[in-house]
Amino acid sequence: DSGVTQTPKHLITATGQRVTLRCSPRSGDLSVYWYQQSLDQGLQFLIQYYNGEERAKGNILERFSAQQFPDLHSELNLSSLELGDSALYFCASSVGGGPRQDTYEQYFGPGTRLTVT
Amino acid sequence: GEDVEQSLFLSVREGDSSVINCTYTDSSSTYLYWYKQEPGAGLQLLTYIFSNMDMKQDQRLTVLLNKKDKHLSLRIADTQTGDSAIYFCAESIGSNYKLTFGKGTLLTVNP
Image (tube, each protein chain N blue to C red):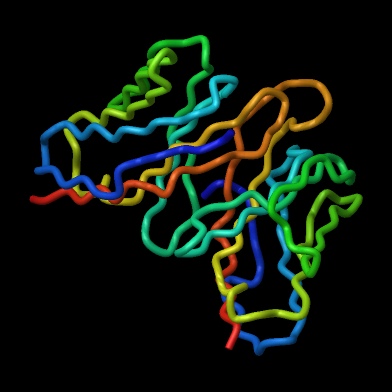
């Protein structure tokens, strides 16, 4: 158990809908990262938040957005869902990840499996 | 640019050593990682190596880094059936914390 929790574990929804995935980082970790794992694209970085601020952005679609709250949990919002958005969405956390170069270890949660029908 | 390549499959017998290979293209990679993913589970951080190191050993795991050839390997000694999983190589570059992953190597351990 990495200490990173994600809810829900599974989500089935229809095209055009909107969903919210939730992540709680390990105790003491300031950074949260979101990754998408699909069969065709593999594991891809979406976005990183550090202590409430967006720190880095990857291949995240405009239909997707995220935020990190004062208690450091994070939510990934996916809207206008398409069949191709079906994937495993992972959250990871690390102690650092801010402007000062520090710890580089990212610990992953169990993932949320999203199925769009 | 960033690109991490791995062979897709490896099959070994229980008790043998497994060697999983990875190549990366960005010479400014700072850290290189190995993660393990079991079916239906998240990614477990196994080990990582800083780019100025050649080798790192942690119990049954040995990581070798050849910076000249941009080649990383993970050796698992005395491989057990519980080691059957997908192993991902990943890199981070400079102060950019995002991880770029390979496609993963499916390790099958036969009794």
